Amino acid sequence: MPNMSLKKNEMPVQAPEIRCHNFEEVALGYTKEQAIDEAARCLNCKNKPCISGCPVAIDIPAFIEKVKEGQFEEAYGILNRSSSLPAVCGRVCPQETQCESRCVRGIKGEPVAIGRLERFVADWHNAHTENAPEKPDSNGRRVAVIGAGPSGLTCAGDLAKLGYEVTVFEALHLAGGVLVYGIPEFRLPKAIVQKEIDNLTALGVTMNTNMVIGKTLSVDELFEDGFEAVFIGSGAGLPRFMGIPGENLKGVYSANEFLTRVNLMKAYREGSATPIQEAKRVAVVGGGNVAMDAARCAKRLGADEVSIVYRRSEEEMPARLEEVEHAKEEGILFRVLTNPVEILGNEEKFVAGMRCVEMELGEPDESGRRSPIVKEGSEFVLDVDCVVMSIGTSPNPLIRNTTQGLEVNRRGCFVVEEETGRTSREGVYAGGDAVTGAATVILAMGAGKTAAKSIHKYLESVCTTENAI
Ligand code: FAD
Ligand code: SF4
Ligand code: SF4
Image (cartoon, helix red, strand yellow):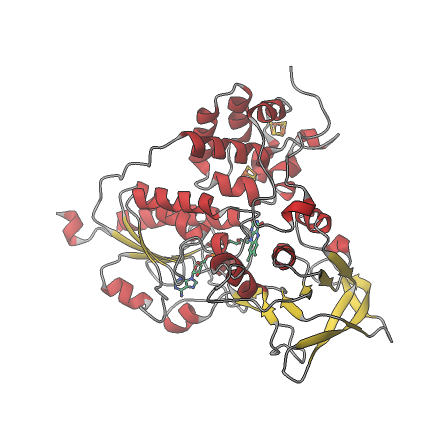
């Protein structure tokens, strides 16, 4: 008998007044009993609409059926056929606009908690399985992957499983991309990402960190070194600024720099080599997930007052609803329909306020959202001593500027053939944020998978003399 409750099983969480003082994970995960009870809400629909909402087409009803039966390892096997990072996606996927948005249980009541069940199964597997995957026999052919984010890691893993000798070149000192430098520990514990990276090294993938392609080595040099194909998964890590006066004052950060200092460099620890200036009143400009992460980090670093400053209304905010709710519970203030026009400094060039204007919404613009218009005579000064700019990112130009024959669009993203991830240069593939601009983990993973398949097909077709013998 299905469980006909209209509501999802609630996710146990750390209480807001406790969690806003620590960096430990907010959501604590379902117990075995909660997972089985939630799985019983799934109707195992014949036409499986939920699958069409998942960019990597996980067989959702099949894995949930196994959870219902308490066969968690079998459920993991089903997840793993389509996704190499289920513990990550179960936590950070925007499920409400993807798989869960298509669930029939959502027509009258809440959809099945697909993401929470995915997280439960992946965590159960990680807690109960010691075995690292076995290294497949090598086919002797080498592929280079640039960037160790979800697209690069997925591409590397899929190719390694096919016997390729894969080397990942990563600019930072740690692999993981945004999963380690951007998304904070309280949303995605780093140990989970590390476990996935350990699995890749067990498969034989070499992680070459502190290697900036375009500086330390060029794409051409990778081919000269004997790599037969290259995948570019270098993300979209170049921050944008508003271009208003005062953005170069001390105490103004891009969200990427702020989060990298906190997450990767542990700025909150005493004696950190990359400290963040102590701030009492922080303004985070922007309304996406990155802004929510920066604001919640600022609160945990000890700020008395943290505000999200967003030029549209809350309805237009691109951040996930759950993240907005968590931020509000933690005391983050939402100053919507507000736009900064100048950051003010003191004599020592530290931030000493932010001049803002109030906005109202006009006609929809090309994005379909109502465009914000300045309300006349509404200028005021917000009392802040730190400003974090979180208004978007674009791909870093380094690789495109140092590589011949790579077509990019006007946003600086690599142009690829959608079905294969093939770029305009032979043997070079690309995917993830470097192609789409800032998007999601699951889309980046999907692109890595597509490219791995195409690279395999391509290399099968270009048999070298050595391989032909
Ligand atoms: P990235 O994860 O950016 O990885 C690219 C890697 O390439 C980086 O490690 C970088 O150092 C490396 N690199 C760059 N240039 C070079 C070079 N020249 N040589 C060598 N290495 C290089 N998505 C979600 O689905 N859910 C969320 O909740 C979510 N929250 C987010 C929160 C934050 C703070 C941010 C910044 C993003 C968030 N995203 C979220 C978006 C998601 O993380 C990205 O879409 C995804 O990580 C893109 O993966 P990628 O592999 O394309 O690139
Ligand atoms: Fe849903 Fe994301 Fe899991 Fe796909 S990977 S089933 S979209 S949570
Ligand atoms: Fe289960 Fe919902 Fe998918 Fe139907 S649509 S199979 S109820 S998860």
